Length: 475
Ligand code: DSN
Image 1 (cartoon, rainbow, N blue to C red):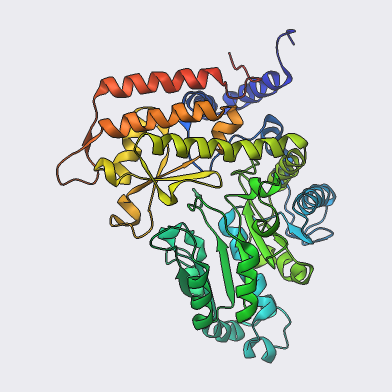
Image 2 (image 1 turned 45 degrees about the vertical axis):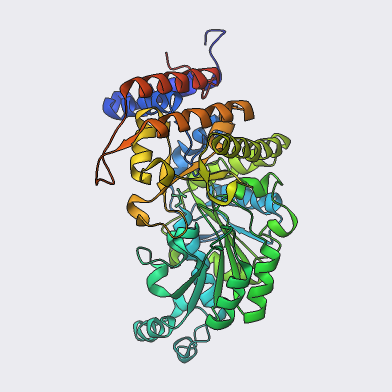
């Protein structure tokens, strides 16, 4: 190894050489993805950059092992090392979040939510189908009992945040199984302030009497008071479930504490591991001790076999999040988001709720005469990667939208500071002011190439100052 070559460079270069020998197009795509990610200004609120240690923990022979079941209780022989991996990841998760129980098998956020739904149903639903079968758990039912149970489950109720207020598809909406298995209703935000309206949540809960009150969001730029949500859930006999996929990194980094930390308040908490938590792509469930048995039945109830290599990477990421530096990272995410929101507002942009308390800034692009779809494409033309998103009571619906969702976890990992987020605000406004909607279209627009060239160049300069994976040089 040459003296200036890092361990990471050696590892990734050798790994790509091995892949290239079998399928060069895949090695080329992996290399190109690094080039693209290095050059783009990534403001997707749900994305981040995992560390080299996390990446390497995923690329190995743990993928070769089947291990359905749980730690020490598998449907296959020879799972000692997967047991170790799963136990270490769960231990880090419990310690990091102060949870009674952690289940690290879910492959995604959708899977984590599905595990949580079934755990609550298994715990709470007194089903004649269950009783008749003499079964303690739904996975002990006969086909006939299942048919009855399906009819009975149709009556179970879920109350979650509406999509246009920033809720998530898996919180009871039609394109997801949660919208089919539950009788669902939503709560929204206040029409004047754009803030979560706890009186409305309480009134909806009193009237609807849900089995599950679901809190959490993927496009809400403010805090949720989980102590109040638990009080509402208790009042109506609901289980409080929180999906913290977006803000798990802020909980881990102790930015969200007390009433704003979901773990002490909710009976069950789900998350992904790859957003602000900065781990591998995957999911996780944290629960109170009473739900341990039901949560552990996630596989094979609703999950395929656990992915040992991904659980290994989760363990590494969770260990990283327990280092003191992670708290500074989490604080910087929020400082950067505030700087971005302030910079946008100062330059005349409309920011939903007037600012942010977390990692998300939701920009209303109406004022520029654009749909979210046009704004998203125009920004991409200039090297700025965002995603369009509905805003509360969006007249353009969930496909074209009137908003752009921005998030700071990824740029903060690259080391940008508040002054540079202000510069990013300037770049965004420059593009949106120069973009002209084609008459009558929600998709087409014109944008002077001189603007895209200038903004792309400034974005590339900014990115060059903060190299991504500086320890990896593929030559
Ligand atoms: N896709 C994630 C997001 O962008 O928020 C959640 O599913």
